[in-house]
Image (cartoon, rainbow, N blue to C red):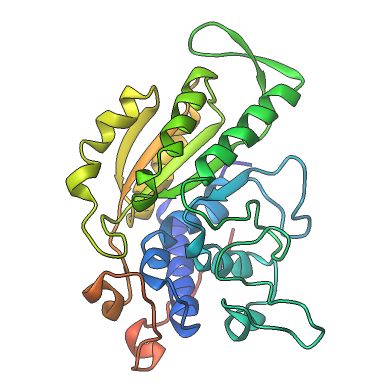
Length: 296
């Protein structure tokens, strides 16, 4: 059932995003800058837009989320924990790296997201640029398997896929050419059940990306995608854009989210690089806690 986007829900989503940043900062996560920049987006997806079930992570009718910039997996682990996929208290001690558990298994919270390891993860990532192609495959496969007809923007009957595929990509990985091959595929097959979200924080590990990303909106439009721009840290903007994308048929959608690398963690915002060492000051000082209002 659709949720009403009112002030109460916005405050709840903002409080959840704040708690996610506290979790990531406490965990000394290695890619904190890019994790923090997309945190609001991930929270809006899991707690507002996506259809999913923590008690049944592999529910066939769930919406899928593909994280192209998979090194920012912490931005998914924290909201998944708060949504009930696993115990939040287990998350921080087992964060990232190649930690071995007592039974000989690797930690379920890898530095890069791993579908085999973590409940709620839909895509095993690593090499940048592959996520959008994988998301195209999921979206096209859903259409091929769907039983019900749907008339798209161009008047062509298309099956109703029953679930949507969301794909968060980073601006740095757009240097990989297969993103644009995937963009052409999605436009050709009119994958209206595919919603891309660009975490446009403008920085990769070493430089400002905007000098050769722009004009980014015109590029996606030229590839046949419905495109819009938002403030990637304004929760109402994020949710409204996701709602707006629901009303577009006959084309894949791309939401350009303007973000700040390290958002919400002053030490990370100041350097704007990929690192994410835990702040030296107490976490309650760096990111004061905000009580999370109960869900209606």
